[in-house]
Image (cartoon, rainbow, N blue to C red; front, side, top):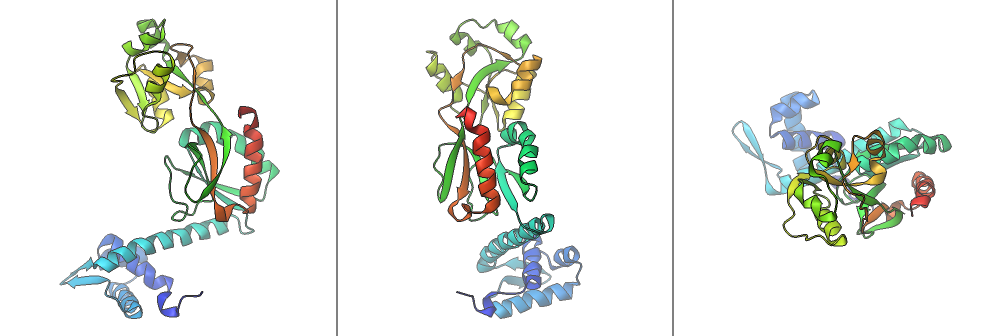
Length: 298
């Protein structure tokens, strides 16, 4: 059902309001939009008259959002961001075929990116936009077609497909290994342990798996594998890292196995997409290709 015209203000009115709401200043909004202060003031006033709602409290030479105006500004900002993203996608690929994919940073750069040329050569009409996301998000609030996710296969309002499992290994620098002379699993507790915030209990799981007391496991925290790997290379401690993401470092000797005691992670990598995008042609092509690429790892 189409909304009445009064509830569909023009982009110029919404842009003026959003800029003023974000900057808290008519002057700053006018400078950003390359308009005069009076023009921005008129546009905001026109929007208030159209909606029949006051959006700002006007106090001498300053403005302050009303409660309703503050909530409206957040929603309008999201809507303008989606319109901008759609326009950029159209400009990048005017014939359609754009896939916007959320990726995990290290998986995206070390595993996916080197393989993408193969996909694009098979599907030259498709443009892929990559966005980094470390945790779950709401597909309804972000203009994203699909995501590569590590964890459980459940994602509210979305469908999932298993991509691959992973095996993590305790890794460190050669010097650190020589210093601590690891022999048995319990020796690992002598060294500083590096932790990932997205997997806070990984070391406890590894210790339990190898019959090592898992109480009071402390150490430095990192939010990405890449920084944890670099810290391990620098000799700051031992990190549990997926072996398939650190093949180059192991091959070059920058990292070594502190102990040859791998652990298969209880969770896995999944491709996730909202129900309404399931038949999106670029997503269908990418999903079929990605599942074929990861088949040996399942």
